[in-house]
Image 1 (cartoon, helix red, strand yellow):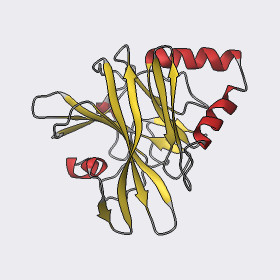
Image 2: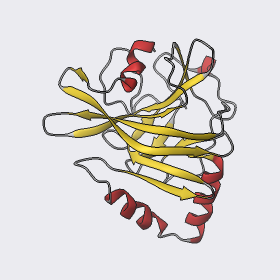
Image 3: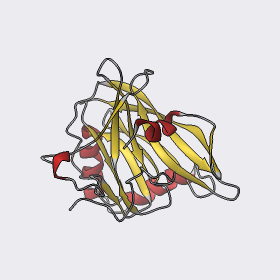
Image 4: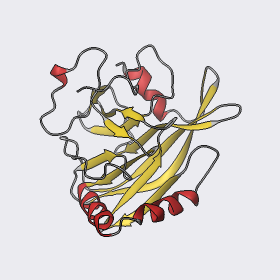
Length: 214
């Protein structure tokens, strides 16, 4: 994985082959514990948070939309912690996962079965799981909120949950298995966390529904 490839997510208006990458704001993500979860909120809300500890506070979520002549897709979902430039990228892990165990064509990531990914704090994740366990039709509320922002083939929502919030978004071309990465700046601080939905073609892009680590 090269920094040049993931940096495409940070470049608003970048033209690439038959697409243009355009930024769209999804509002701020509120981190109350510093433990970040990325998952499919409809099907897998109980995912573990990433092992990395992140700052507390509110941080902008930017969706990098790949615009084609007749289609649009969420190519990357990004949380910006600092405006500095990332110079080192690490694939994010949960639990006892180790990057040393991965084969060259494997990734760690999260499964998507409802065409939707998200970012949320661990506290928001606990609240979402509790709500969904009590109300098995709560998914209809999430769908209704996403419908409010619908654009052709993608949408998003930003919903308050227990002092934190859920920021959800369409996942590229739909279901699959997607990795997330932290970009570290020259000071060794996390400047950005992003999920790559495998829309942008690259010889160095390992994100594919066919390459999970098992």
